[in-house]
Image (cartoon, rainbow, N blue to C red):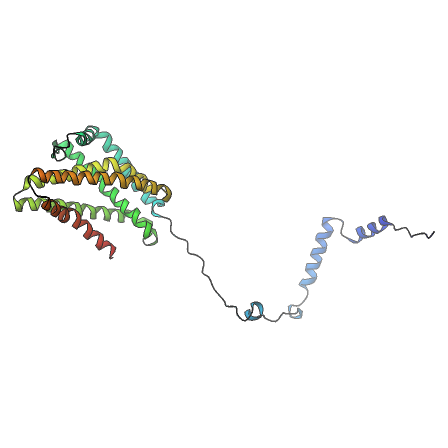
Length: 294
């Protein structure tokens, strides 16, 4: 029987362990020695690879395409600090007006529950205190509507990409002034019509009716609009439906009240339609078309 040579694994492992660095210090020293030896080689003696063209690397059909870094889009207007600050001021003003005019708010809301066959129930201002409440409600309603216009405009034409955030209050002020001029134009047109046609009683009632429904819209729509101004797009869609439904209902009530007022004065529906076109529709449509063409 042939004898096989005995392999001493312990001696082989010992030889390998002796040939390799056994400690971290020895390994670090070997790396440093290698670095120093490479540093002593002149750069000219190192072989240099020939340049490779794009055709050789990627093929003859390859083309160089330089894609610019995507520009960082400006944040939406409802996330800007100036816009949020104005909205918070309007929230505070709304709460103060409602708290200090609870009786007037009750009177205004009670007019809706009165006999609807009475055409003049929404055309009475009932004293100076009630008149001041109407002007105060309209005073916060106009900037609120101006901010709503900016928020809706920002959906299609991002405002922070066009103007700096510091200019947002200026835009809100300009929009508020524009809405105030539009309201004064409508009221002035009614006043002039009353003087010219000797029908001041009905034109005064139309102005009072307009102011009452503007104040009523502020009372009911202001909370929803203020929430919409600061809401995200997903939540804003839900709030927008509520604003459209409630605003549409108030608009229908206003149209019905104005029609009943004309009929109570023995004025034809044709004159009522002309009033809507000349006073209500034409100024708003003119401003809208002017802004869309800028």
